[in-house]
Length: 424
Image (cartoon, rainbow, N blue to C red; front, side, top):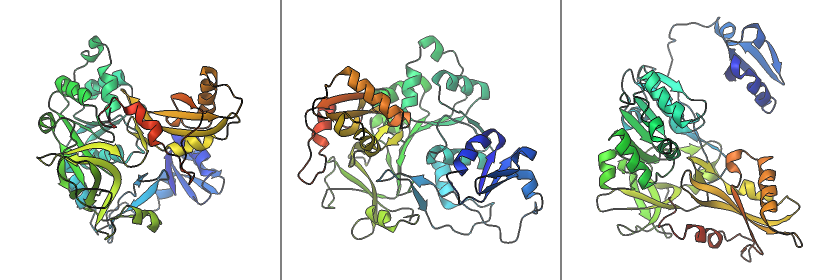
């Protein structure tokens, strides 16, 4: 079953044609216009459909939870299933209690969501606000000046952003930045992507010590967090562990010395499995099954604060959105002038990373700006905008190993040569 609104019915109709197993679509505010069908799916007005059911509590009513999705170690989304205890609706689940404390939820909060709700964190924070009896303001798309205007208009108290949004606001002219009254803001949380140190310094100077950061995965393996004061004392950190037992391990699964980078593992704080995917579940587990990872690299300082330095895969994080380069590579090699292609992330001061393509041409094809533009237009015709390369470089031959595996590191590393880490 799908529940949508009259304003989104046209989009829902298109989606339903691709989802023949959805049997019923309820349309809020649909009225008679909702009657009919979309492919194999029956359309009904929401109010009419639920009118026959009781409004009072039923005896065996239990609190449910969303099955959130995470891309994790591969590009295909994976549903995350956790044990669901039997709780009546007036008793929040334990994980909600933790997240409510992590995100500083409070009764009557006014929450501004500038991020897309297909991300688990914005969706979760909207739920926190509503369960606290708060008001939620949703932005259809982020715009720096509009964001500031909304804070003033609705007297926003809580919000969650990604570093790219900080950067966009900081680049506004000074007169526009100070035009709006932001004094109602109590808590501004950020996560999803590493925040450049200069950007966060400027945000704390502008907004004051209300900025909180956390690091964690949708899988709920563990969480770290820090407030503004803690971050200023450990600049660049993503905080100390609040949930789970964090371990930094080398390639052999052995703990590394303090200050040495390795892969970030957690002794799982919240057990989970990927829905209908035991093989992918197994890939996240240590050999003895006691620990899990999402493939990030980092190190701990003497105070136990975590610093992220790299990712063990070549996933690109651009503006807080995960991008998997294989899809773009697969498309580029279908172009008649392309013999081979590699796609990876390179530094971008605004987004953290941007998509770069390095292309090996078919013999006899002339490389140059015209071909680069042609390939970018080609990608834009087939891929979502954020997945498309912002720039294209050319090479006579891409470095492939005898096994056929593309050795991207030798291509990517020169672009990061002036950076101490993969974080801008």
